[in-house]
Image (cartoon, rainbow, N blue to C red; front, side, top):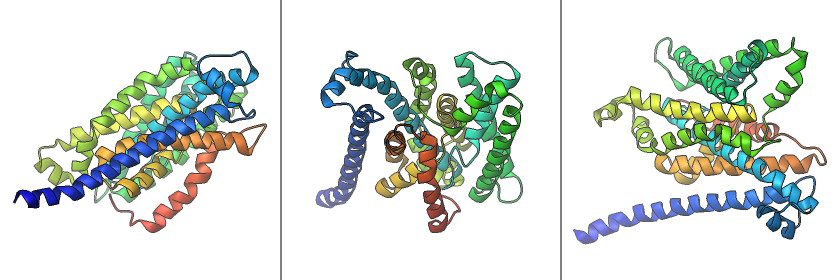
Length: 344
């Protein structure tokens, strides 16, 4: 009997080792891409200047370039991790393979809230932008879920996707309607709406870090809850999980992550859709592994997108929101064609 138990444990042990190796590879990729991001741009920095710049040196132009790129790279990593995590959490909460902060309209809801605060209420304090963006994301998520729950069958994946798409288009149009009469803010708002990490500073990062850390903590505690929810509400309730509370807590974490990211970077789409699907193909559907993998994969994707945006348009650059859209749109079509879009 002991020998049988040992043999049964080997496949599980090998699977866990494989998943751990995948997470390690993703972490190494994030570090390598982070170093590459500080070295590559309009000016290619030599390794000697890179090492000196990472240690705080600013004596040469290359070292000064590294000093400017460090907060940009950190912001890209944090924003990518937040968007990847929020996408995985939303897919788990809604059991919808198309769930994503952009597709469900949550990014555009946060953006609309910020624009209204800026144009109508003269909002100028940096901290206010974060709080208003999180509030806008929360209201939008609630609205989409309520609309998607109407009618027979409740909140099915298809109804949520349609409600989110309609809400996203409507809020994007409303944002334009608010901005167009205001020539004094329209230029800055339109640039921010594209989604990017240019102009990042440590002050901006510290501003959103508490919200991101709160979202990361909730995600860390959500793996088991999402695994139970994936079995169905009745099974989860039978196993002792309070379904409504679990959904609310996980949704709160996702809203904090995508709201704070939208406030500082603008609405960046498709990261929360693409990354969880790729990670699910590599690691399976266990959210205890999927959530950290989505965070690392999102960070790697956004840092890589920022590098690509700087290289393909030198001496100018493409914002990461454009690059992720070019990558994400074909993947979205592939998911729709490949998957039976019912539920996870």
